[in-house]
Length: 349
Image (cartoon, rainbow, N blue to C red):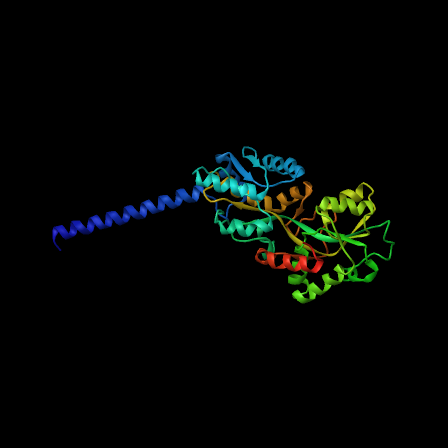
């Protein structure tokens, strides 16, 4: 071997060793700056504390805005939760505008079931590993998000107008002619048709047949679930077939003569948690997501009046139906078809 060849080989060895050394340093640095699923919440907290804050874009109820951020900051001193409120569509528009301007502000965001496909299609969320989501069903999580809370469509009745022993015990009973001119609902709640078709009957035909029988009772429709609940309290009609489950307990506590049918209902994701790509505070964002969907965080959601998505955490009030026909993210793309069917069944313009 010539001296030149020997020198050339030596240079190659040095270069290879330098590259390997650089790669090792880079990996150690990266591992030290961005959390892995192996980190406990307390370990992740130490990394998040160095970032100091997390900016959350999420639509929260007034009660949730008071309870949830305060609980998070009490649990993790030194990490400020800056909550930006707004409807999901407005927050999505804001995120896109900030990205176009090259100024990413949000670290994490929330979206209800209806908006999740749009959020995923825009590819604005980063993949996350959330060990706390292990108990959740596949319907309530994905590679980029985990549900934080749920809501349910159920039936209910006015106890002054429906005698004890005569109350409906199933949706099938609502198709009975005895309820003629006695049922009301929200005209936009086609989701309940989706739930029955996809999860209960596994058949569009059977679901349509049931709701046609209910439609034959001459259902009266009112827009707005809060107004619908108030009409039920006032006795506008004896039965509501598309009420929100969480609207019953607070009114019943105040003495309202209403009762909910909790044998079955249709459920959907009310909120979710995900980390945005390019989040300025990635560890704090992941800390928020992991805490929010953990049993600890979900108990706080319950205290805030929400219905936790975590299967082991019960809401403060009896809200979850015994059988919940849960809508999934894959169902959303079929919403237009079912909405059309719903309008045809009830002759809604």
